[in-house]
Amino acid sequence: MPYAVLLDLVTASLSYFNKKSIVRLSDLRDFFFDKAAVDRTLLGGQNPIVYEVYDNSQPQSEGHLNFGVTVISPGKVGSEYFMTRGHYHTKEHTSEVYLGIEGEGVILLQRRSGKVACLPIMKGRVIYVPPSWAHRTINTGDGKFSFFYVYSADAGHDYESIRKSGFAKLVVEKGGKPEVVDNPNFIA
Amino acid sequence: MPYAVLLDLVTASLSYFNKKSIVRLSDLRDFFFDKAAVDRTLLGGQNPIVYEVYDNSQPQSEGHLNFGVTVISPGKVGSEYFMTRGHYHTKEHTSEVYLGIEGEGVILLQRRSGKVACLPIMKGRVIYVPPSWAHRTINTGDGKFSFFYVYSADAGHDYESIRKSGFAKLVVEKGGKPEVVDNPNFIA
Image (cartoon, rainbow over the protein chains, first blue to last red):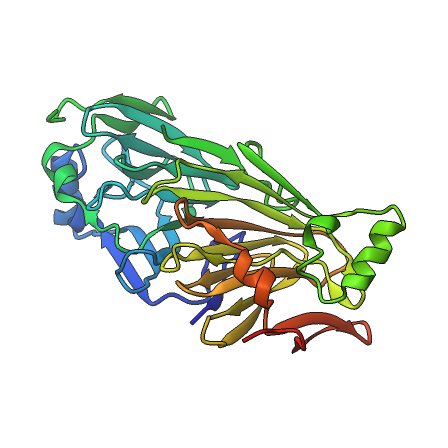
């Protein structure tokens, strides 16, 4: 059935979702560059929430669209900003649309060919992620970074490619400002 | 390539689009209930813009997503509020997501089985239009009614089914307020 939910365009909160994911630092150990820094934080007894996803999941069949809100906490691991795992869609011909709601960040995009792109996201910026581009979002601000997304419900998430090879670029703080640098650990 | 556009969350204007459609009263003669009222307006030398669509059209192939903004002018034809043609998707298994930005209106939804639904849209309301539901948006307010949409680029638009049979319901003004009434001309 058709249905409606409320999206607060200031706080990015959704009045309804049927799937909530909470991703903590321990879930992301393989994705951050500085694994020693991850381990130090975890050994210190801290395991902060890095991001949350509030999803309206539809039946996982062709034609349906999932939508929801991702909220990335402010923070860093070493000099690398808090971020999502990043993924290719399992069905690589599917795409995604993002709309920035709160805070500021960037989206890092990458093709299997090695081609990369990086676009800022903030309130009101719409990003088109075309087929075959892996995508990761990164909070480069001091507060929450939240955006609304829509993608094909049958797209699927291939996190393993990213776990194994990483992104070609890292987004790190240098002198108080975000900078996009080469990832020395990237496996092309 | 991935790209970004700005969506003004107050005025609903888009900084970039690659397809603009302007739909005037004369284009909608077959869709309004009171065709005599349409003809009177046109004969009086007026042919107002009923709605505009600012689209980011992607390649029309499976997996891509089109997105953009629809702006419906305030106004009425007889007692029926200004509205879009309404359509089924040609690929009926495709769906759509709406996000209200400015003004107020409703979305009328209908299945070929005759099942109908009607949901209000206003700033921050997200509407999920599942597969197989025809959908028409209607401006029930005094100002512009604008919303952001995302749908499969290969969905296609079947306006002919609506031209021939209409929607089972009309949204009309009664005593200064919108009311959903049966369409006497509806062909089930």
